[in-house]
Image (cartoon, rainbow, N blue to C red):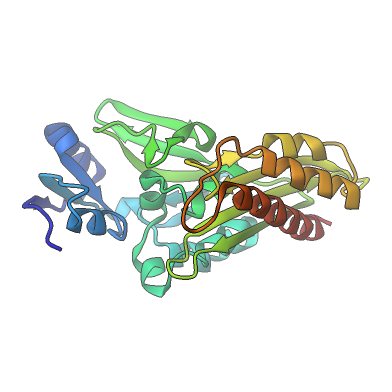
Length: 289
């Protein structure tokens, strides 16, 4: 498998990269880790005339605190995210999910921004971004804008990104006290992709009831979604056996049009969403308490 002929350039700043995107438009593609784009190019499912390699742009890498908000550069690798002490201490669900992506090679080359921009329906991180209520910084030659993760994903391999835009950083707001998190997935054993993945963030009040819950689901449908019915079922309730079962069942029904393929039927995916929501809730609530 050989890609179609293409040009290659490696800018050293975000400004240079954006100028190249403006120049080449739809005929250009950004290269981050390459684990998604390069296979598509080899199959000629993607045939960019110009490849813009982001690997030389140092300002796109790294993890830092910005007055309590955690900022992650778009080309920071999954392995770096999984091992980072700030991530592990403040957002363990992100470290947990990043540590389960693909294999060692993928985690050391693949990037958080590349994964989100590619928007594979079976990727792990979109569900986590939904549960953490992340904000994505998107830049273009005209300026920058912040987009909520909940609005960013528009369909299978489809996001809000326009041809002249690039994702530059992910911003995670601080989590309240008495908050627990967890990520659960049924993985494809060959690829590590999520047949179903569930990310949960739960905050308990002083009486042990659920003050807030966010549940992100990936792998089940064409795009990641928030299980809002399940979240509402938990709000204000003490998370006992009956309430957890009710929320888990609701999460399965929050998937309006589940995928049906060789890996799992639509009905089985609904079942997996319920099972893994229940398990993730139990772990998150235990951590919050």
